[in-house]
Amino acid sequence: MLKSKSLFAVTSTLLLALGLNCAQADTLKVLTAGAFKQVVVDMVPAFEAQTGHRVEVQNDTAGALAKRLASGEAFDVVIITPGALKPFEASGVVQASSVKTIAKVAIGVAVKQGAPMPAMLTVDDFKAAVQQARNVAYIDPAAGGSSGIYLDQLFKKMGLFDMVQAKAVLVPGGLVADRLVSGQADLAIHQISEILPVKGAQLVAPLPEAIQNYTVYAAALSAQGAQRKAAQDFLNLLASPAARGVIHSKGMTPME
Image 1 (cartoon, rainbow, N blue to C red):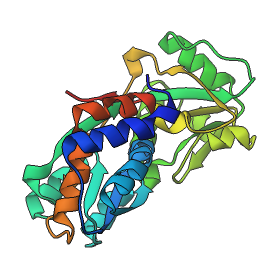
Image 2: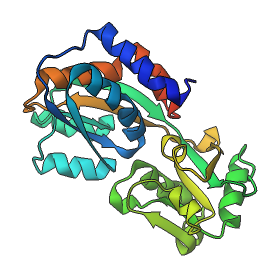
Image 3: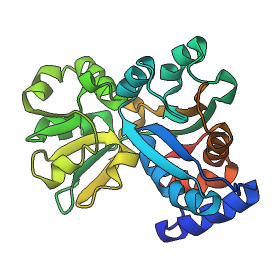
């Protein structure tokens, strides 16, 4: 895994290798699902410094981004789940030929830094941790977050739904593990890439593999974007082999 302080230099080297050196500065609007935001944000400074372009990053849940695309919102690059992209490929909102699968991320369990770490090797361990928690924080499924939608389904299958709902801290978007730091919850369940950035939160472990759910992210270009060359350069950067170190450092797994 790369140390965060070296990522800017690594990305700069990557940009040179890709030949991204544009004379005219453009502003790119990048829409990204929250779990992939950390990768985008880390790669933007070197891209801006090398190319002269400005990158405006906006993040939201996958469901909210799909609604924004459906409403006709302008953008240059979007990073979202492949399933959410499909209707926009069919309708011509994104360039179907530009779609690149970038990474996947697992769901993890976190507690406040310094709190006892529950066992998380088996499904029974997970069930016990949820039952013993005072409050459990996760993304509100109504907001369209993929992990929240999955967790509601999982709790129903495990017979925990009613119990969890009575003590759930449903987060409309953003970093669920912040609720650990604020004291609103003592257990948080979210994509690992959105747990790691939260100071004061501690990743316990991924969900046990038997109940794990990986979210895959793909990137695509707008079919109507004004900055097509710059957008293609940014997409190439995200999908390049050398970007793997950044993706790994954010708790995600690059796709082949």
